[in-house]
Amino acid sequence: GDSVTQMEGPVTLSEEAFLTINCTYTATGYPSLFWYVQYPGEGLQLLLKATKADDKGSNKGFEATYRKETTSFHLEKGSVQVSDSAVYFCALRGNDMRFGAGTRLTVKP
Amino acid sequence: GAVVSQHPSWVICKSGTSVKIECRSLDFQATTMFWYRQFPKQSLMLMATSNEGSKATYEQGVEKDKFLINHASLTLSTLTVTSAHPEDSSFYICSAYQGSEQFFGPGTRLTVL
Image (cartoon, rainbow over all chains, first blue to last red; front, side):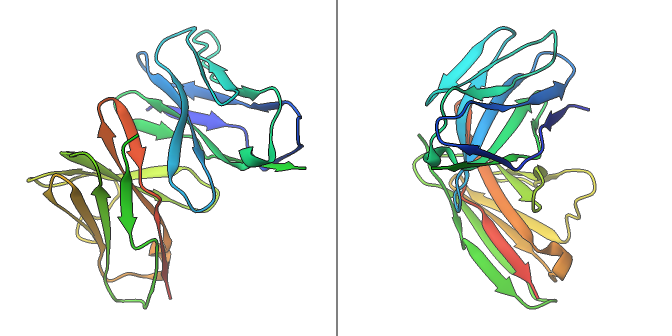
């Protein structure tokens, strides 16, 4: 079945550092890919998405490119802020939604 | 965006009791809602799909008699954990689609003593 694998955390960075959270997937067909963010005490919020190969999703300085050849959808941000501290989930939607295990990011001032 | 709420946000109960969790779509109607379970440091696991006016569809391995789902209106789905045990302690999250986007509730943390 479809599945998502994302890098284990936790990830701790200093403010203004570069962020990469790796995500790879296995799926039949052509799924849509998502990154969700979960702030403490809140539900998941859609951060960005891409619906077909080579699409780049971007929002709030984060971006991820749908790479069919490497079955990847890595999340990147050039300069993280303390307010980016949260748990990030990679997900795909094929026949249903599948989520990665989540990566906790802590950004220190 | 659309808002999905859950109540309560946390609950502690004794083993053997039942607990009801509500999921509401506040500003839209949802004929289908989804219930997930999230274990610490793990991903969301889809438990069941709640269908308004009909029976819920449960994922393999989820006990339908233990996790009772009722979707009585277009804005409310309830999950009742019956005869709860400590292993049922988890974070339960509901979601609903508005258009093509999925919106999640803030979750309910259940602790069974």
